[in-house]
Length: 304
Ligand code: ADP
Ligand code: MG
Image 1: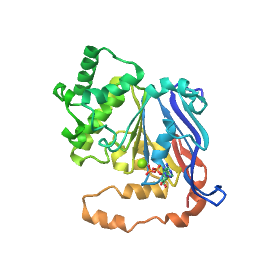
Image 2: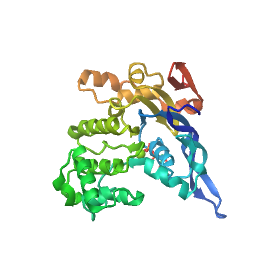
Image 3: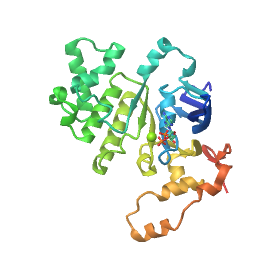
Image 4: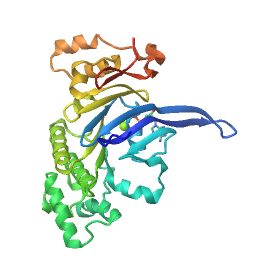
């Protein structure tokens, strides 16, 4: 795609895992974790990717950051086909593309203090190598993510889950990336801090001109932050639309089912909702059809 507004262009991405091998070591069964996914992310936007656990969201994210080699398809980042680049050519992209994961505890080395944790990506990319400057830059970042200078020499176990996620976010933005893959960044946090972290991600996006892929298993978590949303089911996208359009006018039965799983405080509405259940098994191969554009920017897979 030659459109300069597109930062990430995913074309027919497939990632198959081998599930077992026969006595000759040949693979017997494949697990199609991602099975033909195409979407684009524009510069400065947030693209939400939702779907239940196991639908292939994280695998898409890992392919985008080249943590996985993919089975088929292409991923273009700012016009470059990443799968064609060697380690040396990939280096600038390893700075430009950063990630935030669900569990900030396992992604932060418990033996490193905050200064070293946030400084680590800077070391890798040779940024702010002078000690005093490093301390200044990290302190400023800490304040931006709602922490304090006094936290510089503390260790991960001294922080709450929400604070640890703030440290992970500071780490991710420390090297001035263009694109951040946020894989369920608020799913493990208390409901009371989820909105704060989302607001902070939005502030950082505005300040640094970031583009986000925001992964979640729950539509209610992505609505506020996403400009557009893709709904994944069984390794495929079943619907893509602007965020509000997807909520106001969901077309695919799977999207409707996901929406109906949003907690509803009213018990009567909750009872009515539970009466609706979509039979995914019976829908068989229908969901594997191509996406169709039903109104400008609203795409849906064929269904009953
Ligand atoms: P999600 O993030 O939507 O929960 P994942 O992308 O993690 O889904 O997983 C999609 C499917 O791929 C699951 O069935 C999962 O078990 C499988 N899978 C993910 N990573 C691997 C891997 N490294 N090896 C084998 N199977 C995997
Ligand atoms: Mg996942």
